[in-house]
Length: 451
Ligand code: UD1
Ligand code: CA
Image (cartoon, rainbow, N blue to C red):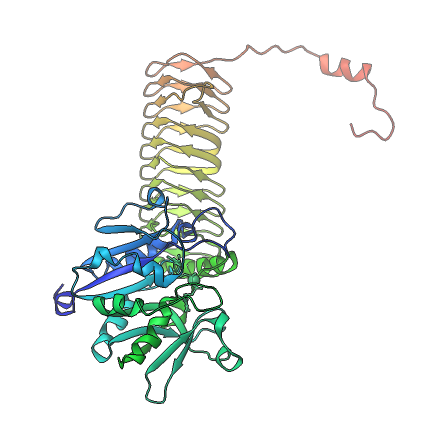
C-alpha cells in the first residue's frame, strides 16, 4: 500500500471494442475465453492489482451485458471501430477532470502481468511517454519500433505500413503505454487515418509527441507476457502459455501433477496441497478441491467442491453444484450434478447422482440412477446416512430414503423408504429347470456359427 501511495496516481484505459475480423467470430474477440474466463478479464485483473484511481474499459455497442461485473470498473462505448486511437478517444470525457497519468492496455493481451505494468509506470519518471516494447521470436503483425541514435523512440510503424527495411526490425510494440492524461488526448487530436487500414492508430501519437519535442522511450518487457490474440491460432498459443503458468503456480503451491502438460485448468481453479492430479484431467470454472485429494486420469470437473482426502475418477464427471465432503470416493463413469455428498460417501462405478443429497457413509451401488427429470420439472432425491443402495437401482424423484435403509439391487424405487427398512422394487424371479438345455436342442448350432 505504501508503494502504491508513493507512485503517481494513474488511470487505466483497456481497449476491447475492436471487431473480431481475424477471429471470424460473432463473439467480440476480447470475450473469447482464456483459462475459462473472457481474455479481457485477465487484463482487468492485472491492472486492478496495482490499484489505479480509475479503470475504464472501452467496449463496442451491445457488449455491456456480456462484460463480467467488476467493482470499480467503468465502461465507455466506442460507437464504431475506427482504430485504437479512436477507441482511446472514447474515454476522453470520462477522464476530462483527471490530472494524473494514464496507462493504455489492450484487452487482447491476457498474459500481461502486474510486473510488466509496474516496470512501465516506473520508467515514466524518465520520459513524457513510455511504450512497452518486446522482441518476440517472430515480429509478425506487431508495430515496429523505430528507435533513434539518442535512444528515443521516434515512431511506431504498423506492420502493414512498413517498408522492407522497417519490416525486419525485431523490436516491436507490445501495446501498453503510459503518459500524462491531458497530453494523451492532446496528441490524439493530431492523429489522422492516413494509412493502409484507414484507421486512427493510437501508435501515431509517438511520432506526434516527438514532433512536439517530447521525450519518448520504449521499455523492453518479456515477450511471453505480451503475446496478442488476433486469430484462433494465437488464441491457442496464448491459452497454452496461460495453462503453463497456472500449472506451475499449482505445483509450487504443493499440488502434484503427474502429467502437467495434459491437465487443463481454469483461472480460478483452487486445489489444496498434497493433492495429486492424474493425466488428462480438465477443470472448468468454479472448482475448489481440498487437501490430499486424488483425482485420477480423464476426469472432467466444473463448478464443483471436493473435500479433503477424497478420491475422484478415473473417468469421473463432477458438474456444477457437486458438493463433496471429506473422504468421498467417486469412481469411473460416475456423474454428479447439483448434489451434496456427505463425508465418506462412496459411488464407485457407473452412476448418476443429480439434484440429490446423500448422507454420510452411504454406499451408492454400480449403475444407480437418480431419475430427477420427469420431462417437465427436476425433482430431488434425498438419501440419508449409512444407506446401502444396491446395484442398478432407479430412484424416481421426488423420493426420500431414510438413514440406514437398504435398497435391493435392480429396484425401481417410487415410494419413500423409512429408516432401516429394506425396499425391493423388482419383478420376482422365475427359474425353469432344464429349459435352457431344451431350447438349445430345438435350435441346434449350425456349422461355423458363433454360438
Ligand atoms: C496493435 C498495435 C500494434 C501492436 C499490437 C500489440 C495499433 C494501431 N497497433 O495492433 O502496434 O504491436 O497491437 O498487440 O494500435 N480496439 C478497439 N477499437 C478499435 C480497434 C481496436 O477497442 O477500433 C481494441 C481491440 O479490441 C484490441 C486492441 O484494441 O483489444 C488492439 O487492437 P488490434 O486490432 O488487435 O490491434 P493490432 O493490429 O494487434
Ligand atoms: Ca491485437
